[in-house]
Image (cartoon, rainbow over all chains, first blue to last red; front, side, top):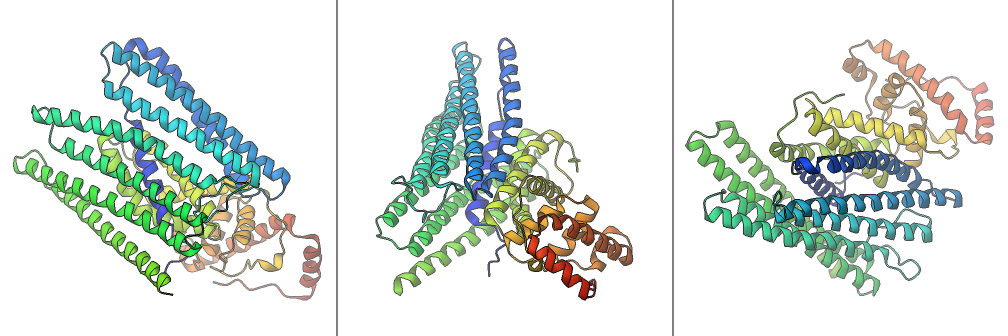
Length: 315
Length: 194
């Protein structure tokens, strides 16, 4: 039985995605010397922003749990205003970075894909700013921390939950275009023998993950609309959301398994010709088995949710 | 608390962090959740903040030898920092049992009050009380972990509990405080449970 101290699977998955995204963002291209000074200024500004962000994050947490009267509500509003200001700065930084990359592309020191990747970052920053503005608008109306639940009430005619879910679709759409181009590029390199076939599999897996994530959000939006139109009861809407999340998780895991299997095969081949150690083979095989175990658990979770839905409909 | 091994190459960092995340997220969440009385929203915020700190530190300084212990230590600091900045509600002392191990209820308000008090104690006192209340450990187990005698832990617990009560008196509701003073005059002190 689940205790109150077990994390929500949705939270575990969201944080995992965020950590993965943050690590991927770390992979930056070394700047050309003539751009160094500007890049350093951007980096210094980003560092300052990170420090202020931590302080603002602390302020949001502190404010969220004590917005019980007007004074505290103002505190919460002020914290979100601060976050919005920071998100605005982050957007400006991302736009600066994109302009620099475009300059480098124009002089041939960066690939067009780098510029596209920066456009995704700008889109991410824009989506984040819009999300915070939506949260701020909700906090101003309710005086409480913004809702994320499918069952949340509409506030003064505004459906903030759907609004923010729609924003979640913005970045993956653009990222999908970039990833498709990346796959074409990888395929071209593989065809001429300049890259391993695994590069195409990695791209295909990322495309699949992005498509699954987008499909899950679109499905959640549809469930939310049916709940608001009273076509679905609260219990069923809640279970349907869990089902959508579980299916998205299952799809993502299947893709990861496909990738891990390819990696395991590639490692085995390297081992056969003396380019990898026995421990590398064991690690890649273990990773595959771990993912398969996770998929089995995910299948079970999905089956449980579906059984609950069937039980609910049988009543 | 600093990470100890050398930084991993960029390509190896992501799978290693992903593996560590899957291995540690549930025990880390449980550790935090127990300390905030099962307040899901707060627990998620604190776990999130802990992982963001890990992502800042690990790529620069390398992975810690014991990642879960590192994460728990950072989570504790994040939690203490959070409770140092919040304003607690006035509390009825009768609702808090500061004597029994592992007795902290799944009640976010009670947990918030105790955490508010613990955030104002010295860490040597706060840590022994946390082990006693939130982790449900007995005196023997706490003593073994710290390689000191059970008698020393009993003494430390007693002093820590007194300090916690003293801190919490600042937020007792006035009527409760008066009743408690009257009650204390007619009752004996509680025994320490081991």
